[in-house]
Length: 68
Image (cartoon, rainbow, N blue to C red; front, side, top):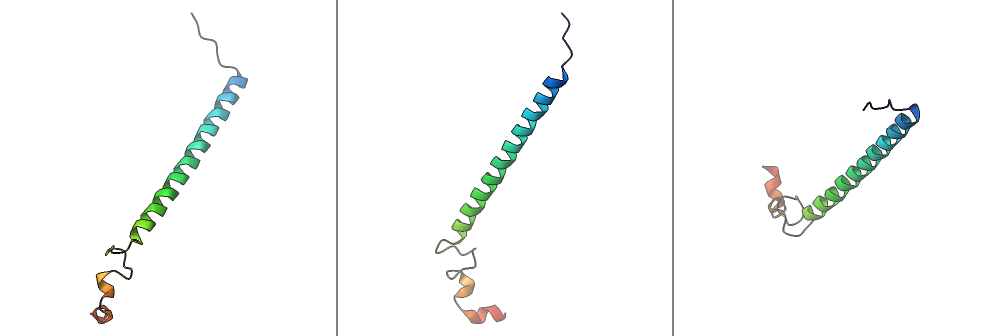
């Protein structure tokens, strides 16, 4: 049994579907990165997070320590 060569129409359709999948994947990845960036920023802003450099940071306990 011999396979038939793909017609130009099926090639164009396949290319269109591949572009749709690529575009959908890129949208998903952008949204995923955005969501996790927001979650990370929220975690840094939580009270008591000494790595955030916020008001509860040990460096902010004594402003004179910043001169060192």
